[in-house]
Amino acid sequence: MKENTNQNLPDIPQYLVKNYEDLIDKIKNYQNYDIANALKMLKDIYDFIDKFNKFVKTFTNCSRGCSVCCNFLVETTYLEAIYIAKKTGSSINPNNKNEKNAIILTSGNIYHPCPFLSKKKDCSIYSYRPFNCRVYHTGSNAILCHEPYKTHAVYGDASKNYGVSFFIDLHSIIEKLNTNLNGNISDLRWFFFTKDFKDYLANLNSKRKQEIDDLGQTAKSSLF
Ligand code: SF4
Image (cartoon, rainbow, N blue to C red; front, side):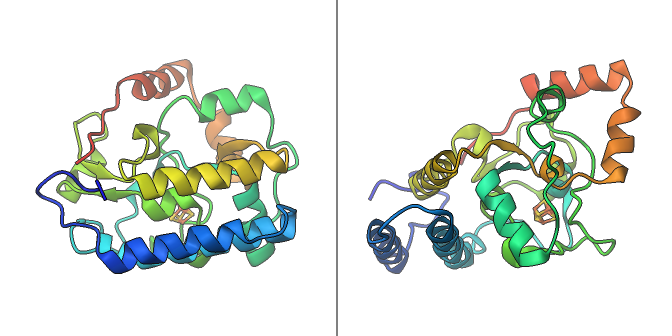
């Protein structure tokens, strides 16, 4: 298997390759892609990523309580928003497909805390967090996460097509399930809209909006 071709990374262990093949077989055996099965498949994928992350921990510099990336854009599918809503009792914003705001939220990193980030800087929905939160790990000194304009090694960056085929394929499955439900993709903050975030958007001046747009164009992450 041609994974982790950079010599600085350990090979993906064979037991994870086997786990991945078992997962794909399991997904193929679902009889239909209705919402109930789509949510089960999503859970299967999350369970695999959680196992995979034990391997990722052997080379990432991410640590609990850092949470810098919880202030960045979190591209989320509607399917995942449903999963979070069902598991946590949170309500999905009925206006989550609002195009005008979607343009702001998808044009680059933003600096506003995720609504699920606790005051202690922990994820309050850790077991139910979206795919993109699960797979994003720094490979550089974590101090660089504070400086997104600088080149920064990232493992599992959605904006760079993830860098490992397991993640690419699994996210593609989630996207297909989401499309099957006519679901959209947006920032997590837009699905779970808070007054705090509404105020943040209302107070964005044109200079800050331009900075966000510029950051979307110029922020650089490099794969291992
Ligand atoms: S869902 Fe959790 S891990 Fe993801 S950005 Fe929000 S607080 Fe961070």
